[in-house]
Amino acid sequence: MQSNFSSQDIERIVRMVVERLMRDGASSPQAATESVGELRLDVKLVTVETLKNTLNESITVLCVPTKAVVTPAVKDELKQRGVELRRIDQTDCGQKQQTPAVVNAAKLSISGAWQSTARTDQVGNLSQAVERAIATAKSDQMVVLLSEQPELAVAAANRTNGVRAMVACGSHNWQAAVKSLGANLVVCNPGQWQDSDVPRLLATLWNLRGTAGPNWIK
Image (cartoon, rainbow, N blue to C red; front, side, top):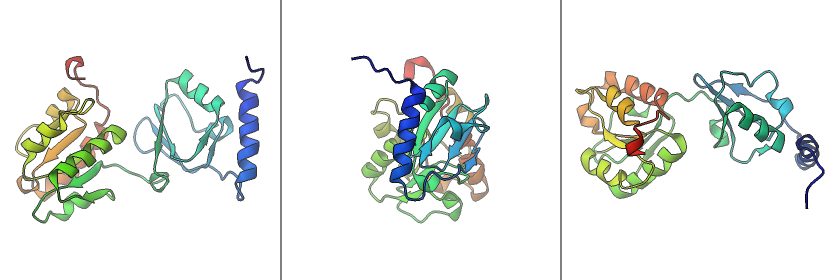
């Protein structure tokens, strides 16, 4: 049976229902452009009106809280513009995040330089750490795994479709390797990195997330 409701009608109905359910109503959007092409909104309801004056031609990714309600009209608008809709934890919305998550499986204590990101996860077992890193890579498009056995971690991670893992060492041209491979999971032995080089690594990897690799490794 074909519906007689337009996307605008559905949006209006959804907005009315959600506003009644939320005691505090739909709050004003708090937007923050995390990097070129990315827009984050900390709202419970995303409507066309919400995106007014915030969604422009430079935006390629819209991030909203996991439980946020996105109206059909917004989804249609994003599809027409070629903008990706990405759901993230609400605690990350509106906060400036410029480094990838770090999964720490190193047995020895690591320098505080690796903990410059608020998303540092300590996992003692390498197998579990690889699984955690794989899950994060699929959602975030970039993750760093710390281990004294980087080659073993890479071999295990690359068994998963959609994951392109590589070892990065401070003495090699890791940036060119990430670009050419389209890597989304980078494994580092923290003992082989100078503290002064770590911030640049993390910031650069965050900016390189989502880089397309050659077709034959996808």
